Length: 560
Ligand code: PEP
Ligand code: MG
Image (tube, rainbow, N blue to C red):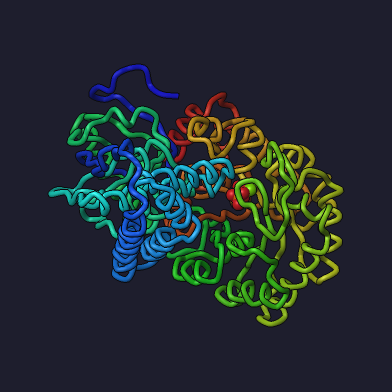
């Protein structure tokens, strides 16, 4: 979908909010390579070895530069740059380019064709792989620039604090940015898990992705970027912009001062927890006021694995997270493989529609031993660390699946719960709760399946907005079922990272909020400013609305 009306002053463009915060500044755009000329004739056979060496040297130079930048960067930026350097030296695409050069293609054409081949492959694989397409194209541009004697493409160094806008940003564009000069990120493409989002979170600068119409906003235009509401206002009224930025700065200051634990202004406690994907993330989360881990996405530990990790290996990985939060709550989710997170060793069937296919707990149907071994490893980690985790199954659709999972988990002495991500599970949450000890609502998938809209699709981002009243009605239903029997119901999807929505969730009755570490202070600080009654009133008001925008506005009116 693209805008049909021209971009003029005060035009408000909408995207997907990824990192909260508000900034008003001029737009800068990354320099792009001119479209490479690939029309030249084939090269003589005698020249081909030299051309192949030229190509190998160019790819190696690009990788070395990226590695050097990785060494000077820290945290996620360093990891992202190192991963891109690795991709620049990936045998598969280097081999594909060399093969073309040996068949007569000049190096620039060989690079473009080889990258196109892998772009097609990654796009077909979809999900997280599709998001790496931007990285591949970035490598292509850098290698082509090197081969053509052109300066490396990338982000210009601005003279004044600026907002970096682009179709999409490659990791090497964003890693190592100075947050004092680049104060916000906005992209036309990208999703909440894209590299742009990851880097923006690390830099702590507001970020909005999937903005419809952003390509029409030229460099130099002043824009107001709101990473909380997901909007970008072109040429805003300067006084209004200054007031909005000042209010956001006050919120940010409160967030910085907030030290936990999670509670409303009148003392109603709500556990504020972290989502993590490995020991390193858990240790980083421990540095925040997070009171525990509400979602450990175990499948993310094994995305690069060809073979299943042994029980001992798994136990040691899980143990790292349990150790990081010794004496605190940790909820481990069993493998949510499939769809956008395929694991090679699971042997996923070839499916036309993997998001509706054999993913999450459904894998255990055909491969029960995989789940058994994971539960054994979790129990082993619990014993080794002395920290007793809760375990939960992803993608539960029926009470029978929940009962089966609970029986297996209890056999290992583990406390079982399930995720509520499928509308069927929300509708029958009371029946599911007869078998398990807690629920955790995954609003990312619940929104995807409720709205029948791919969560990775930028075009459908307004449908997968967790403020959609239909999604919140299902959340309310699941929470009511938990309240009725006195069992905890948490939220661990992106909804729990939005301070305003988090208050609404508390008003609905959720007992814990789990989100990316970076979002925790903002959520905790917001909750500390409102009473439980305000949260309940906001929840009632939101449930009476018909659109996501009305829901947001209703909550804003009662909670600000
Ligand atoms: C969710 O679906 O909301 C969730 C937390 O799980 P994931 O994002 O890992 O699918
Ligand atoms: Mg999910």
